[in-house]
Image 1 (cartoon, helix red, strand yellow):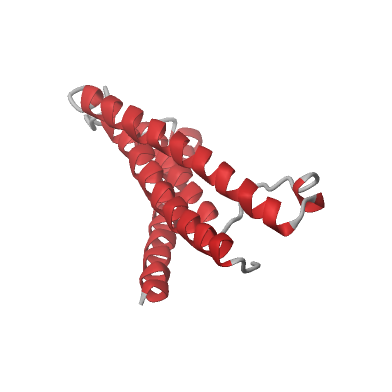
Image 2 (cartoon, helix red, strand yellow):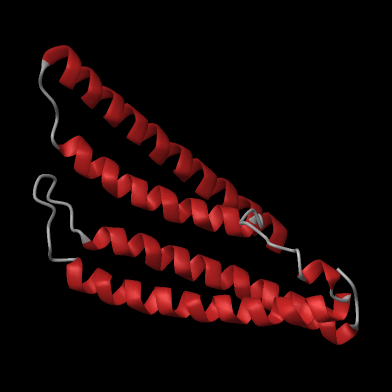
Length: 161
């Protein structure tokens, strides 16, 4: 059940990322054609593309974290025993969870502060960019909690990965 829910959420996120990337590409391409071909442009495309890029980066970070695709430096940890590696994973995951807490609380404060500030051309609230980091922090924190409980139960039982 949990695997199917995780798979469905991942597919939804991937589809959303593809939609954002497609929209950004079309907007920027259209603006380039208009600028160089017809000596005009659509001003709103730059702002909307900027907002979409922020969302793309944070949603991509969620996907990369869920698939463990971020950079891992294992030069030192590979030399440790499996038990010490598991303890180190618990420590680093706990520190990342604390960083997620900071990201979530800071993003929420900024979201509320900037919700009434409107972008000059599009009129979109600037707080929307901070909502992306809030959602990313929340999603990564949930993934970290699942991983923490999984690693902790494995460590308690004495199992290997």
